[in-house]
Length: 244
Ligand SMILES: C[S@@+](CC[C@H](N)C(=O)[O-])C[C@H]1O[C@@H](n2cnc3c(N)ncnc32)[C@H](O)[C@@H]1O
Figure: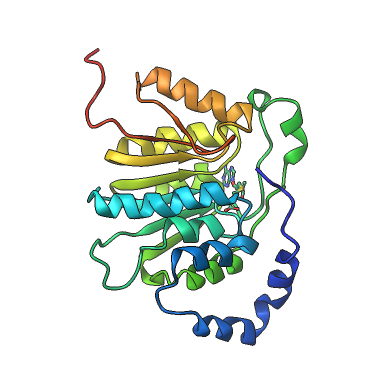
């Protein structure tokens, strides 16, 4: 997890109200390719290249394998990785998927004891804004009518969201409490074979603890795939792995 904003980020923020910046988007090709998209979102994300590639490919996989359901991302910040995960949410697309995005847009909530000493000073960090998210969605040519953004704390917004079945669940919420709430709220809605991605598993001990506890509680026995030293993912088993 890289917390330093890229150098170009302050430029994007400054120019957000500049109409010329937005109209420049119209110069992007309608179907922006993988490489162009992965480069274009860099100012809008803290997620490193290898993990962005995984999210891009996961969006393709759920289509190729016809996994039913929507795409849900919890922890959006400025929207770069959400635009990658949702890049196939386009008009006239074969699958009528929706993209649901959740974030406080006020930065991280206070960490708990489970997150460790180092995490305690991060309250309010990683604060994104919704305008940046809108811009990132436009860059990816995502059909905005298929996107719902829920600004606010997860505990307050999750009960109001009708996410339906989920094909791809992206968890980039850092802390024990946040990750645990996401898993408890959305795991059951993930379709068999659906992809669950956890950005901070290798980086923050609280995220790892929340995930490991959830695996133990639910008797999930599939392996976690390491994307890099922090991002991990797994496919929801097609059927319960135990009968107890
Ligand atoms: C590391 S950032 C996400 C980075 C983002 N995925 C990207 O592409 O750069 C973590 C985000 O999780 C959000 N977050 C964590 N816990 C939350 C909670 N309980 N409610 C709402 N937002 C939360 C923070 O606001 C922050 O924007």
